[in-house]
Image 1: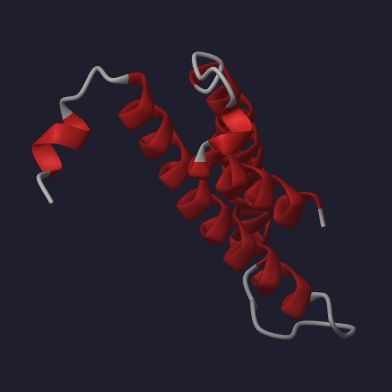
Image 2: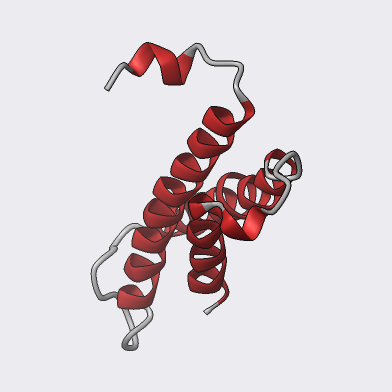
Length: 105
């Protein structure tokens, strides 16, 4: 696969696919932060993170990643699929719907 075609492309399908891949990876990173937060809150007192500043930084990073890099990116992708005549027939449409369902759950 030619990576220059993806990173230097002005094709809307390629750009939309890159947005989708980026949103998926950012969602995975945000989910990892969420798991760390839930592990820390699983019991009273300090569980895994002894430094309070690190815990606050993890919560802030989780929020920024999920809001700005996952949710906004996924909703912005919709504009790239408008050019399709019938987006339901497009395979990336189903991937986008699955990712949105996973994030909502």
